[in-house]
Amino acid sequence: MRRILIVLGMVLAFAAPSTAHAAETDPPQIASMVLQPTAGVDVSAGPKTVRAVLQLTDPSGVKLVTATLESVDTTQVTPLRAGARVAGTAADGTWWINFSLPQGAAPGQWRLKIGAVDDNLGNRLNGATIPEASLPTINVTSVPDADVDGPELVSSELSPTTVDVGPSAQQVTATFHVTDQTGVAHVFGGLRAVGGGQVTPNVQATLVDGTPQDGTWQATYTIPKGALEGQWQVRLLLLDDVLTNSTNVLLIPLANLAKVTVNVSHVPDQPTDVRATAGNERATVSWTAPAANGTPITSYEVTTNPGGTVTTVAGDKTSAVVEGLTNGTPYTFTVVAINAVGPSTASAPTSAVTPNNVFTTGPTATITGHAQAGETLTAHEGTPSPEPDAYAYQWFAAGVPIVDADGKTFELTSAQVGKTVTVMVTAIKDGYVSASDVSDPTAVIATPLDVASAKAIVQNGRYTRVTAAGLGKREAYTVTLNGVVAKTGKASYAGTAGASFKVPTTLAEGPVDVVVTAASGSTGRTTFYNAKPRTFSVVPGDTSVARNGTTTVLVTGMAPGEKVRVTFSGRAVSPRGAVADADGTYSQSFTVGTRLGARPLKVFGLYTARNGASAVTVTP
Image (cartoon, rainbow, N blue to C red):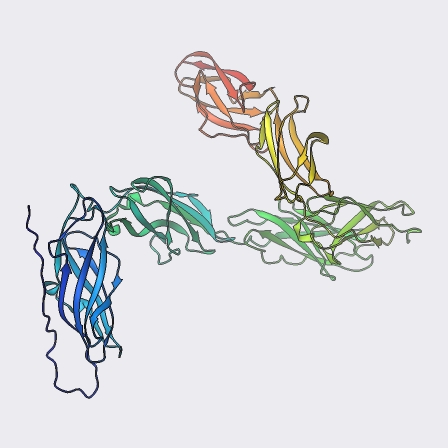
């Protein structure tokens, strides 16, 4: 048997004691240090305790001693521990510090490492000043082929690989494949701007798949709004295992550290060529769309002067009708373009334009519809005389105008919950002064049921499931599909419901309006797409292509988001995970290969009964 050596005791003389002190400013002294058991420990079958026994002296009394055990030949180290006095006095006493060496710890010599020794006056002996040769060691026997290496980073990925932090901060998820003989403990780090000084806050990754020995770890990092543009790369600060073996992160190949491209979009340029044409109590304003600068223009705001009225139109428009102007009054207009980052500088004002009997009976505004978020309210105008050419509407919540709520109908949102809603109806006729009326308020707007469909696209005749939350305890409910009852039931004691039902084969192809109605009258809705057997239109870009040439295919008649599989001459040519666009179309290019003659071009959707076919002739 191998004889185990240990330093049984040492007397350290770090400074010659003085005979008198004007004030006690000397740090505590270590009279002796020893590690027990002196014969060493064997951690091959389980963890073992190692005790450090220290004799400490100080005139004012020792207050605290801390230390660790560290492997001489590896990076393994125990957690920092504080000692406890077990004999003597604070001025001259025996202190114990217990360490636990885990099963499988590194074999060989382990050394006591003093952190600090403090006395009651705040004097400190810094452990870093103690020569290593003075520190006791203990021999450790461990398992064969003990794990003394840090974890290995096999790969890393970032998703998404491109973000735009112009409008707002963006989150990026890092996925790490890490292996270790004993088990990974920490995968800690963040992202850094390549070539710049910016970094994200550091995050400890979480094991999401596999085992600590061979697993997938994930962390989410936040790149702040307006961060440095360009490449950002994973930056690991700590990669260690349960035995505290650590990997030198500086030596990890850069190729193993994933990157993300950071773009920074900006507000749009100023709209140009802004013109106004006068009408009867209105004006039409047009403009040339400016550069969007990285993110699409979502809306335009047209401001009227005098008055400051703002008219908002969608970002794909280049004109707006401004209503409610006073005949005989000159007006100018400015236009602002808005994207996710914010508004542009206002355009130069237009040249001034001037717009030009009274209704015998004005409008009488009323509202119909269910007073619940998610529902649609409808404004009614009464019977003005003479008959107006048109009506204008403005919806209000608690007396405050709702931005962009200027249609005959208004879809309630959570912003109106707890408030009443009114509508102002304005009758408009050429040569007449517009007349307006405000409706009585609705009931207080309620919160809708939270309804969701398990599937976005459902095969006709198959089962699907709809869930609802926000019902009362054991409250009865009904589920309808396009107005036809499909399921009834009662909510759980928690006020939730889950209804499974078979989609009727009589239901037409297309979006299905799913409504859950509680006994109390609260409702919630969702949709799914009913996918019946169907033949798609499959149109190749070219019906004759030279071998190894490339052509395209356009598929129409699919469900939005429906999965697509395209084959040509019996081989798959569509990318994995391909889906139809929101308009139910799908297009791609593909290579025809070398087999000559008319070759079949086939398309399959959600299931085999949803398909389409064509052919392309491959020529020499």
